[in-house]
Image: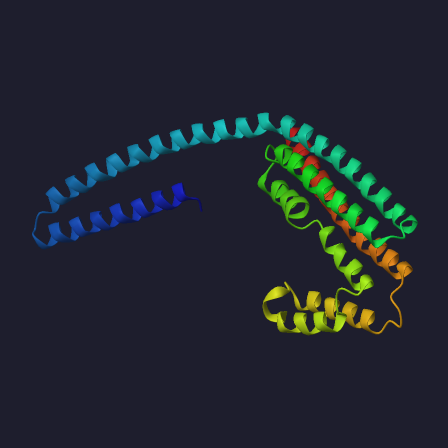
Length: 244
């Protein structure tokens, strides 16, 4: 029930209560004829107001429906444009992942991480300008991934482990302390602990390990981009169906 329906229902209940009170009072004071006439005038006004309200609401609903229908072509074209950008972004990330095995220097990896992070944020800002013309869900998904947490900046963590700047055991203790408020689900916590334990048990952390870890994590980034693309496709099909 929307606010208009709620307000109308509450008004009906209030007026009905008043009518009942008037009827009871007139019966008790032996003024039934006066009470019935008064109630009749109230009910007559109420019925007239009801049909006027229904007519106004019908007009508003038709206008809103027409506006929504006329906005569909623009939404569909905007989604197509966003999807084209996503294809370009995905190709860029794929290329970056392929090149990882040709990079032996951690400093070069850090530099590439910085460039890729800036690239994704920049594209996210651009895509949000398109998404604002589609709907809130698309805008939120693009903002959360590209602007707030695209996964690229966190890859620097594995470089720090390789270089010996981070202690896996210290990190394991730290996430155990933060378990209650840092992780969204128990599964996220278990996966994080499992990964840190596996790293701690390695005999040696090599360049190859770092490259493999980067390759794996970037695969997750690509999967998220594909998820957003699928969401766009679902909305595009829905809008096209509404347009028919």
